[in-house]
Amino acid sequence: MKIIREIAELRKYRAEQQSGGRTVGFVPTMGYLHDGHLSLVNRAKQETGCVIMSIFVNPLQFGPNEDFERYPRNEERDLDLARSAGVDAVFLPTVEEMYPSPIRTKVIVSDVTERLCGASRPGHFDGVATVVMKLFQMVQPDKAFFGMKDAQQVAVISQMVNDLNLPVEVVPCPTLREQDGLAMSSRNVYLNEEERAQAVVLSRTLDQLELWAREPGMTAELLEGKMRSSIEAMPLARIDYAEVLSFPALQQIQGPIAAVSASQESLPAAQWIAALAVRFGSTRLIDNRIFQGGVRLV
Ligand code: AMP
Image (tube, rainbow, N blue to C red; front, side, top):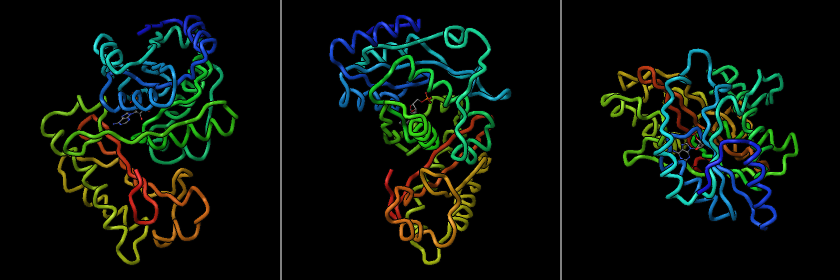
């Protein structure tokens, strides 16, 4: 596995893949790898000839009071995991390599960034879109693999790729979970024992949605209320948001929930998302599920 720290070297490696006739799959991450990340690598290996992973904790997407400094990092372990997953090259730039001078150009995606994590983490998606755009310019991947655990990120990056005609295919991949259902996340290591036990409430709540959504007269607002009550049953849980929106447009849904697919049958936006962000102490966890009508999709 090739370890690359400089942009110039990455470009050279990319060009070699081009002349060798290999398609390039790209898996951007912030490291502290878990099986969720590695499932993206597996998918990339199935679909492309060469897999490049980036590991970069991007300061631009963290707010001033967020966990940039204490975000978990372990380069040696990450490299071992990436190597055994079959990654061909890992790009590990420093902050100075990525941002040698204060950045004055940003990619700002409107509308789909206004709700959910965009509302509770102002500027977060500007940082995400900007770094992903920069990485796309460096790696020039044929396909880029993103986890649906961060469904809004998939919506934002897809919007950017469409709006700016970027020559890359965004491939959304399913969320990997721990045995009890908790979505895998690098941030799960922050949880103490009690918080970890209660954190299962996110996936358990999402599991209930399919049933709730089948109840006659069910609306997005009623579903949100049910999600809130379910989460609030856990004494350590503090809800950041619990929302039901159309997906991927992330617009509010009016009227009965079944009408989402009925009234917009021919549109991809016939899907809807139930999305949660919940704090346990200082740890903020997210999870979501995508539905079509009353049927679970992701
Ligand atoms: P992160 O390192 O948290 O920025 O995540 C890097 C990529 O891995 C993103 O596309 C995430 O959506 C994806 N990812 C994170 N957690 C999971 C998971 N549990 N299952 C699948 N993909 C994930």
